[in-house]
Every structure is written in structure tokens, then in C-alpha cells.
Length: 230
Figure 1: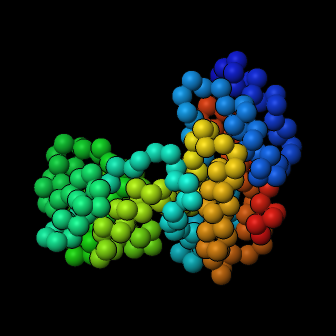
Figure 2 (figure 1 turned 180 degrees about the vertical axis):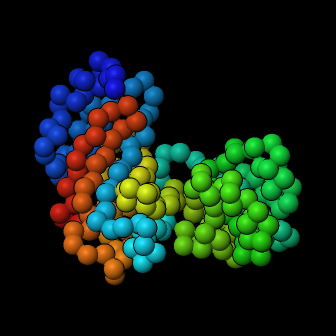
């Protein structure tokens, strides 16, 4: 895989065999970020569970203390008073069947999060095959299927993120931007890891957090120690 000069320069400053204390890890990431844009910092957490088993799923949502640095575009499926409340709360798009048809016919995906009131799930269900693979299907566990759509919209806009295992038992989540600095990134990291640790399934055996790596968009990965959080 081709790596640019800046990436190689950054990589030289990071010891791949070391698990860095969170404060040190995020200071390193901020120091070595070399792109001309404000890079997103992502966390990749490998867990000692098997996502093929229903009783070992790890999924949930949390509002990060400092947000993600990106304002998510929210699509809400609701009607009547709830639709009006969603608009007032700052939803970018609100609708019913009209939105279903727009997605089906125009292959429209100009949104980051989907929120739905429970009475609309029959309608939203028709989009399962389109929203599911993109990780956009609303769910009660993530707080995106709720009678209080306005509150859900406000939380998403405040920096609520969803975390869930992929097929390789890894959780990938943005925890902010390089411009946040090490302290705010550390706060967001601690909040997300706290939620993941709390969500440990009873069926999980052995070491729960196998590894934890943080990286800026264009930068190398930095191993982060979770010892203080366990």
C-alpha cells in the first residue's frame, strides 16, 4: 500500500509496540496530523466477543461530551405533531412515504442519521434492504426509534454517536477532530470507552477489550491503553 511522505514522517514518531496512555496518545495524534484539512480522529476497538451470537452483540449510543466536530444531517420519519416537533428541533428532513419514495426512486442518501417514531416503523421497514447495509436503519437500542423524536434530533445534533460491532468484532467510531486538542479527544475517548465497557455482554468470556487504536484520517494508528478504564 502506497504511503505518502507525510504519513511516513508521522509514523516515525510513533512506536507501534507501545500502548500509550490516552493523554499521550492523543497528543501524539494531534502533533503528527499533517493534512491541510481538520482531520477526524477515529477509534477502533477490537472486542473479545463473537458478533455472530445474538447474546454477544455490543451496540448502543452515547452523546460525546464535546460532540464529533461534524453536524450530522438528520432524516426523521414522523407525522402530525411529532413531525412539527422534529422540524422545530432542527431535523434536516422530515416526511413519511414521500421520503421512502425519494430514497427508493432517486437513490437519495443526503443524510447521516435516521430517526423514526414507533408508528412509522411499518413504513421505514420497506427501506430495510437499502438502509440496513449502510448502518442507517433506526433502532430502539440506538435511541433512534422513539416517541420523542425531537429529543433524539437534539441529541444527534449535540454529537450523539452510535457504536456497534462489525463482522470482525471491531467497533469503529469518530471521537472528534484534530483541532479539539488532546484533552477534549481524551474526554470523548473516556466517555465512549466507558459506554462500551458498560455494554459488555454477560456471555462474553476472557479478555473483553483486545485492542484499542486511534488514528487521524490521514495518519498512522496509535495504540491506546485502556487499563485505567477497566
